[in-house]
Length: 148
Image (cartoon, rainbow, N blue to C red; front, side):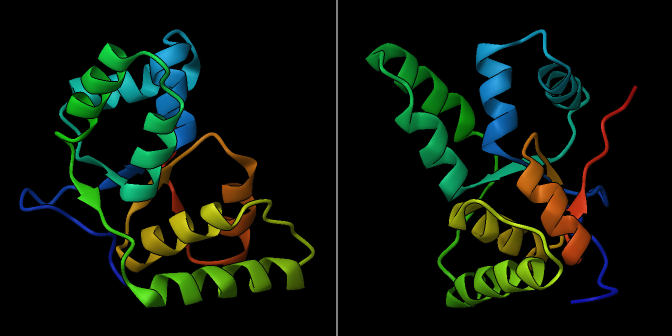
């Protein structure tokens, strides 16, 4: 995995995996820095994607049925990477173990799975979750840097 190019689409641009933490800001706190950056990426027609776990995490928190349908319709227009590969789950365990060896704690299994999928697919991860900074310090996970 080391040294592989970041995944690009047909236009040659890098795909950015947007984590649940950023989507929640986008919908609930639109004036936050992460929400503004996501809005900028969407308006610039940047190549952003989700993984299936992110979709579940976002949708499960919506109480209103109309809002659920609206958000589901919006999000499913973006490419969604599937986490059906057994290797992703094994890699998530290895990520957790690598971080633990370096004295860093990953608080959720889901974050390890998301990181494993991002690494496997050579995606930039746009997040607002300290676990991913720890993972990036211990692995080849690449992080999207916000513009100023």
